[in-house]
Picture 1 (cartoon, rainbow, N blue to C red):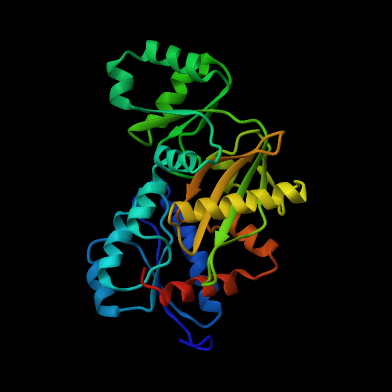
Picture 2: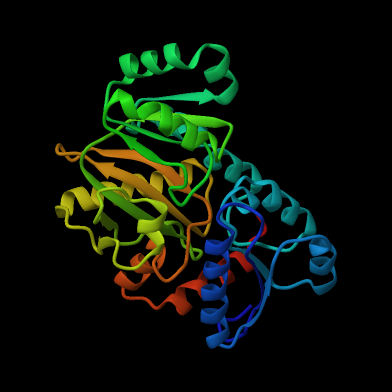
Length: 319
């Protein structure tokens, strides 16, 4: 396929996860950018009949812009692989590994990269062993402050920063609202960064890191998607040698987890310049306030050009 040819792209957005609205906003942005360049784009909400419709239509490429379990747990991506139609993003098996925060952290730890100490705790274990004794053990084992989050999920839903033991019970309840397993990890103090990694066919490369400074001190769901609630600095205000290390780490983790075309690796850099892996985003948000678009624009490229390059790279590669 030559660079001059236009693509027939199906963008999947919506779904039934807690992040449905974010997904719809991301999908519309991708569709608009590709359409403005002349590509034929159809925006679909995954539902009954989707696989039949895709099989009949046979687009050049499918772009799932589905956040939450609907798109990131790997199930849908695995089904898309059976259609023989290329799609943006990793194989379903790789997505499933990255979707599970404890699994991704363990893979990263085994590879020699830093990640905060953690304990993953199912709702049943928390209940059966006695909530009070489990909470006491968590504080003894990990100390405070802590970050409590659902073991799967995105957009900071169900995430709580716990400064003292008194805040832990409520944080566990909030995490269990979104997943059956809670991840409790040591809070690393430092500079919070989001590193977008793209691969348009020549191998993954890290774009300028985004430094995240929420006005409230917590990068919550509201702080992510409401303009003015978070300050972003792109590129991040870090020394060049640390920026290089962060970029290398993000690319290495992208490769390690088997991600493809587009991912976002979230890191915390401490006072000693150590980059701590927090989590990987298989299909990062692409809304008007999302982090990946900020990185793309800071790299000097336009959103449309990069989205088209990503779609084209996926269209010629059945992984």
